[in-house]
Length: 380
Image (tube, rainbow, N blue to C red; front, side, top):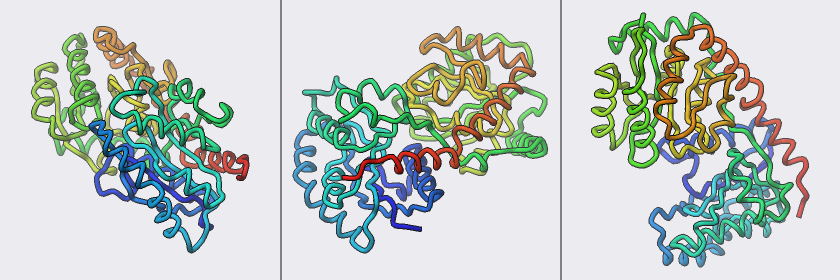
């Protein structure tokens, strides 16, 4: 394996001990590089996140940039990488040194999942906002996991052709299941949590924290309170966090006590939940694209979600699931009820989603796309 790509994630390094979607995608990109025989030494573990919008902190990080670049170059001194790869930069987590380090190495600078919000100009994150524009402008390629990011990135890219739609992906093989796997998973969850195996299980997956996640749970509660469905059903929730004490009673009240809380699950247990459930539901308030929904589909689980952000790039509306306009609680409730009532359609959606992920959004598919991007780069 060659040295390959100097890897940097400004928001959170991929070896951070705290699980998150951001860490998951960073690790998946490293796995995609490994698939094509490229190592990904970490160029830096420096976290540039500025949660509050502190101009003085941004000024200090900008001043620190040259020193951080020199430090990164020293860490990479044994074997020169062929590209520099920065994963996820936005106004709260800018890359203050990657473009300069790549230029000094004489290698292309690649960015994945960059977003640029013009409304941040002149505000408390203005310095970081301008730095994101500089980094995107310096990039030889910008891999866009969320297609909705592209319109705001086009004016700041050196060449709009460098903005490359790169669908979210995962290691699909980890989620594939046979009929026997599904039967075993359902029996296991029913036994551990006292679930009625004959009822329909509606699965929600999300961290329980303030902000968009709490808003998604609140929207789900409002929809379930409106849902009219005669067959027995249960809401199964995989997730935990500091807002659980506020979220749990709301969901229990909305479902008439039908909610079952599994808590935070490790990957094997989460895969078991995907396999055991009948339908996944997530309003996706403020969601970039939703990795849990991609995992659910890889496991053969149909999805009802909000038509928000990059979710349409993950859930194929009318093929692997159904998307609902954001904020329409009544429509969300009606869509859930209609799909819960249609066993054949759920099975068809589940099969289509599993096949779509396996062919178009698998680790192998992402590795092929990544290899093509690198092969087409212009060298400095």
